[in-house]
Length: 62
Image 1 (cartoon, rainbow, N blue to C red):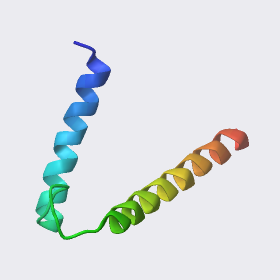
Image 2: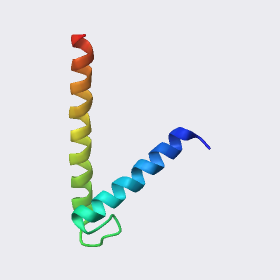
Image 3: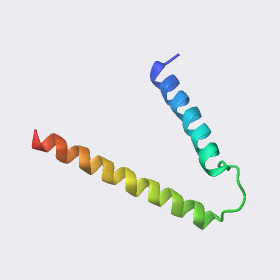
């Protein structure tokens, strides 16, 4: 087995547990429209872009 894949799977399982504990639902929920799902995705991707920019700036400052 690829240990990188195994690490990602493990992290996904942990994230699933935290999300279910925090929000009481998972991605099998049916109360969101396609547009609402896309909004959630867009927000997550924007957060990711901010994290990438922060790390880039830290590396440039070294």
